Image (tube, rainbow, N blue to C red; front, side, top):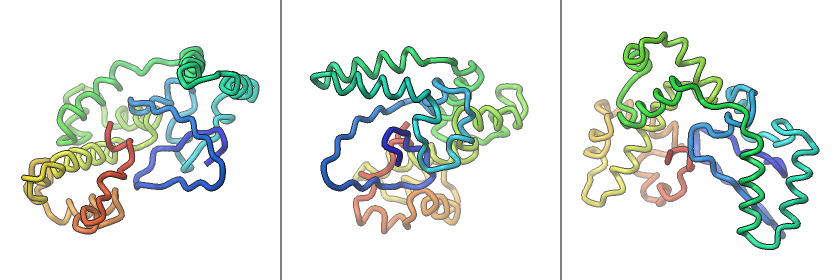
Amino acid sequence: MPKYGTRNTLMKPSEIKTSGDFLNISVRLTIPNGLSLFTKIPMNVVYKEDATSLYDIFTNQEINDLVDSLKEATNDEKKIKVLELFLVSKLIVCHPPLYSAIINKIHATKGQCNVAQMASFFSVSERTIHRLFNKFVGVNPINYINLIKFRTFLQHSSNPNNHLLSAAIDSGYYDQSHFIKHFKAFSTKTPSQFFENNSSEKVSDFYNL
């Protein structure tokens, strides 16, 4: 990961390992994908790599000034204020209402939908939806829907009274082979391996949107 950069949306869990003295200041953008509010670069271009340098999004001077301001801040509260002011000053675009509505609909259905249904519901073409996701998310809408369904399964499975198969059915998985295929794609493990190692505690925040 670059010294000043973004950890890009991934289809699988990942870890960042550090050694020696290390100070990490992170900003979590809680809307998918919040980074698209600060750059006109399409997210599918940004997310071709696992990480992106902030120097590819902001100018060298902007990043250097931000780093200097953070170094001068004497406590966490002041550092947060510096970051907030910087990000607010760099907002350049608002998400189109259609994009926001589609995202909200996917979350409302907990991923129990498909692109064709979304296109019909919003009276747009499937191609339009794919373009919006390429530009603002960096993950195609099919994968995003599956991620939300996977997240829903994790929420159901966290209930100790829920059997895994029951949780899978509640989350919209009606075919065991598809369920296991999606599960391994997102977690790199089978369900039994995943829960044996308490891996649910290490799932990327992207899955928790």
